[in-house]
Image (cartoon, rainbow, N blue to C red; front, side):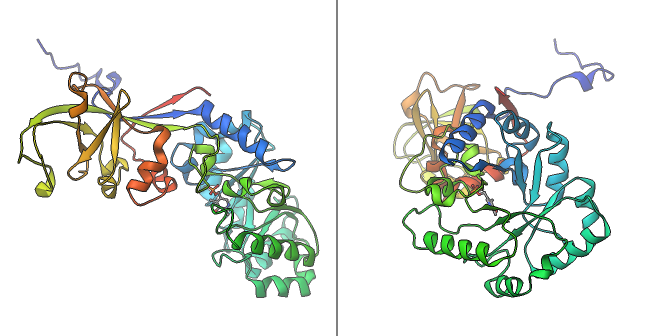
Length: 378
Ligand SMILES: *Cc1c(COP(=O)(O)O)cnc(C)c1O
């Protein structure tokens, strides 16, 4: 007979894990991917881009694993991400750069958490110079030159102005000159050599020549010229394939295992899900799993999306709901039963992203908060 748990003890009763989708994150695979990227990067130091909570995977668990693999330079987008990262890192000398730069009144925060701002404009240079003159011993900064992406960093005009007026950089301790590639995923794209040339010219024209950094994940596969002193891979660390048309030897990091909640025998003409968008063409076995768009499985991924059960492919049928997806398990009669888990992502993260009309970056950073997160290895 079921008895109500003692109210004083309910807080120690674990939340249900069987009926919840599980998110497996393989920390050893992250370390393997880091070492693989370090091999690709030749003599350049290999850093890690760990913005957006390590692309949704949890910077708290990922950062120490990267440090153990040898990483000492980390990149985040926001200063708050950097402050959190500082508490996750074990090595006091690990360096944190903040891509999005800083504005007036934010400098104390950078000092307090030993964050290095990436200066993206002449205004930010002037601000950091004033701050650095006031307080000695603060962190150095990176300078970001826009070499053609027109997104962030000093514009060509600003870069020329700075080269002509080098005293503007006096008292600004620069530790890095960086730029970002727009089309590195397409190795043959003409933007790559063009940006490389512009970057080299800017480095020559500017007064100091601190360390240089150009390559994101895809840039690590463009050859030695693009490595410079420091690379900044992100997605490849997390198992996403950064290049189109080939598959580097990266290990999958993330897989989702969603439990089957119910099975249904369908007959020809039976509709499935919202909008009755799918109708069974004949006898089918449908399974309903606990995974939905609230968990980051995009509605757009329904057409062409699938899960796998014991290696068999289960196509999604009907629409993706907030908490549920229905799949065609006709090929798995006998094993498709409530409690069994259907896998998503894993080795085919890119195929699932394709099916949803997006990229692995978006799938990872959308992963929701309801998962039973299980970290393996590390
Ligand atoms: C996000 C980001 C990276 C990492 O890019 P990946 O494609 O994930 O390797 C590197 N540099 C900058 C400036 C970025 O914004």
